[in-house]
Length: 377
Image (cartoon, rainbow, N blue to C red; front, side):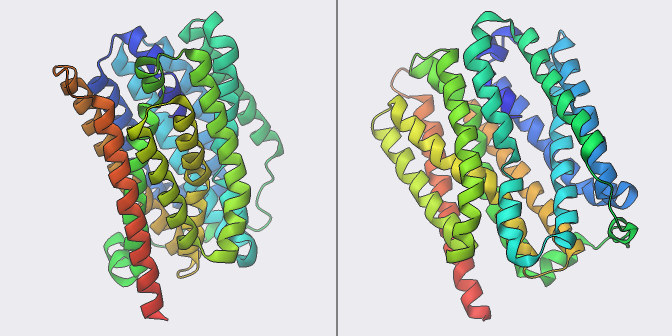
């Protein structure tokens, strides 16, 4: 998913896509993300966390390779949609296992770091884009990324230890819990779903149109887009280490709220003066929160419910995230295409105004969650 966003200018050139079509592909990825999240509970009961993890990471490089072999944008999009589904199923398997095997006092830090795993890949992607994309075609570069993914999958098959106790795997084979019951009986479930949706409102347009903004507005090139994606990965890694520790000290929701407000301030500055260094600041703060936030939300949920309910609520949160991301990406893509018909309207100003409003709403929701927590104590 992140590779698609990072290479969007090149993908648009290859398939001759408009902004709205490109954004619809991005929306498709997160619809797949959402749908897979809905069925991931069933997948966990059938396969268990260990097998589900290996299955999803095993087929991902094959799907990546098939994507660029397709001569049509639709085939490309469908393959990436399956990769997107693999990503969320993989994460839900990790969350389900972690609730049983990670002590509560370490869970914030470990899940925060684990959810930043994609940041390591983004760092590598950014370096590869900056160094090699100018010399390679998009297809060849994509195959290189698929080969690296295959190598990581092979290492997982070789070195990932099997669960020592079958009971941990069998614990997911209980009858499923009705999502409506969970949402009604546990306030934390609805809180997590809405917070995830707000994060989708932010991340969808911000990440999808980051590279096009650099190329089309700031007149940058692939080396600059590669550099900023590398920085996003590094910031995500650092965030995974630091955010969890800060959450242990100041509280999960408080840390999320303050980071969102810092990001909103940077977006406001970008709207006032579109400079590359300001965009770097926005992307850094965004990545600092975005990657570890899923681990923090999962840890927050696990403080209130058992491991099975936690896995289900995390899945519902991913549904909220997928819906928010798909809607926001599609809407902003349409706004970008419509804005080209008017000389006095900047489409990217509309996009970043949406991102700013979404960040402020997310921070307000965090404030509401804190108040509800105080009332319940």
